[in-house]
Structures are given as structure tokens and as C-alpha cells.
Image 1 (tube, rainbow, N blue to C red):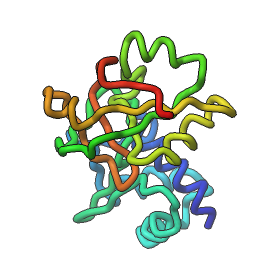
Image 2 (cartoon, one colour):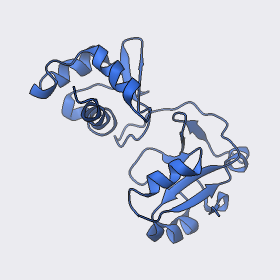
Image 3 (cartoon, one colour):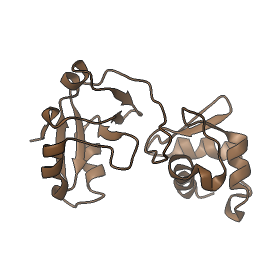
Image 4 (cartoon, rainbow, N blue to C red):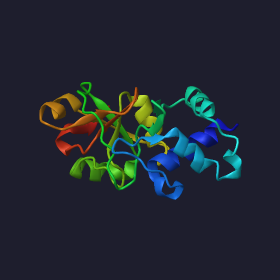
Length: 180
């Protein structure tokens, strides 16, 4: 079983294209494992897939992208589907970080951080994760620091995605600075 490929397939199905798999996500992004397996079994590569494989995939993953609870599964973050997946608001740490390509820095410092086709702005709890994210689009990414505690005290909502990922609806430019 190629668990990395399975993780990518699940992320695509649960985060971006549940309609292509005929999955019915609830308002928190959950779908029954039974429905997911039924949909995936239509593809020859996943015909032998069982629930246990989903658990193994999650255990082996370096990034916690999915969650299983009470016979249901969901993606934890990164959704681009039109229906917004509701998250529980949480108090953030003092600072969060956002890694980005150099070409986007001026616009972010002018307009703030916007979800840009995603449901939430993605932030990192530490700089190394932000750097890895930024490297997806630039070999020498810029790390931005978000004064999350001040933003939260001013009414900006933050949501805890997982151990390393925090989410926000948007972040005004006044809370963003270049990380030194």
C-alpha cells in the first residue's frame, strides 16, 4: 500500500473535490468512513483499501492532515471547497509565522494576509515550518511574523489546525512584520 499516495488522494477528496467522489461532508468537514471507502473502491488502485489502512496512513504521516473519530474522517485544514468548514476558535501563542515567496511580500505588507482561494490563512507555530511552506514557491522564502496575541485581543479569530498549523480568517497588515 502506498500510504503517501493515499494521503494525497484523501487530501484531494476531502479538501478540494468531495463532489468528484460524491462525498457528503457535514458542516465540520466530516464524512463517514464507509462512504469514503465506497467512493475510493470505485478506483482499481484502492479496491483493497480498508479502514485500518487509513489509520496506518495517519500514523506514518509526518504531517497530521486527517482526523478519524466515531466512524468518520475529515481533513484538518487546507479546504478550498465553497462551503466553509467551521473550526473552533482558540487563543493563539504570542507570535505565529507565515512563509511566502519574495514576490508576495510587498502586497502582503500592504493588504495583510488573505485566504486567496482557501478557506483560511495558514500560519505556523514556528519558523521552520513557515520556511518549508514558503519553499513551495520560492527557494529563498521570506518569513513574516504575525503578532497573533495582539491581533486576537483586538478581535481577530484564530483556529488551531493541528500541532504546527494555525488558521485565521484574515490578518490585517498592522499585525505583520518581517521576521529577522
